[in-house]
Amino acid sequence: MYFHALIPFKPVNPKTRLSCILNQEEREAFARAMLEDVIAAVLKSGCSATLLCTHPFKHENALVAVRKESLNDAINWALEQFHCPALIIMADLPLVTAGDIQRLIRTEKDMAIVPGRGGGTNVIFLKKPQCFHADFYGASFLDHLRVAEECGFSVEVIDSFRMSTDIDEKEDLVEILIHGKGRKSREFLERLGFSIVLDEKGRVGVQRGPHKEAL
Ligand SMILES: Nc1nc2c(ncn2[C@@H]2O[C@H](COP(=O)(O)OP(=O)(O)OP(=O)(O)O)[C@@H](O)[C@H]2O)c(=O)[nH]1
Ligand SMILES: C[C@H](OP(=O)(O)O)C(=O)O
Image (cartoon, rainbow, N blue to C red; front, side):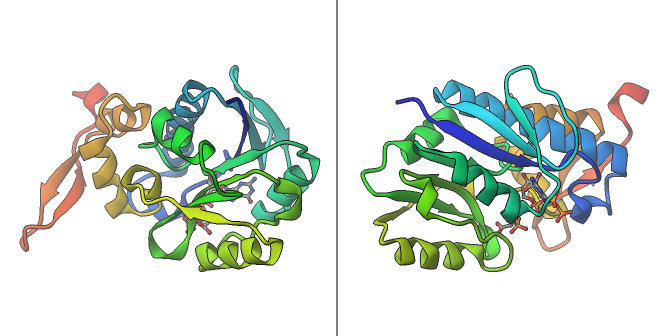
């Protein structure tokens, strides 16, 4: 089955929660690397990709719509245009695979949803997108279940480590370094000198060593 994926993307000053370890230029490059990982999985799954971007941006394998409004308003603008099923997938899920996406689009329910850790929503597949409206931020997973109920949708909640792993904070980089073999985002972090480290309590964290290209 062939569907259309909407990928919201903020190319300018993204991922501010990573400012403690990446400067703005690095965060922009890192956000692009994660986006590449997501687009690769989307295309491999057989879906096409449209980026909903806050600023002008070009990608050779995706359509781009520049929408200056907020995340929810941009998604809701796009959903209104859809007359066929739609996938909404965030650009900060670099571990996602084509098989993961196929799991959503093969759902027998009206909607499939993947929660993010901490109450967020990482991916939504909608068979009838026009009834729905996005309500990201805060406990958006609960909000999206409520919207689905209002629409009378049957819902499948998908339990997936890879798709639930959105990269927001420094601690999340551990997951890319451990599980992100072959991903552009892992190559990027390694090039910058990131590696995993154990703290004094035995927990795994990340450290930034010398820039590989500078060695
Ligand atoms: N179109 C659009 N996409 C957005 C906007 N804000 C964030 N995004 C995208 O939405 C997804 C989830 O965003 P967040 O995790 O909040 O990312 P962020 O705003 O870059 O990160 P922080 O600055 O750390 O909050 C990512 O794919 C972002 O690129 C927006 O205002 N408009
Ligand atoms: C957009 C938001 O992402 P988070 O800030 O939780 O990563 C959400 O999932 O509602």
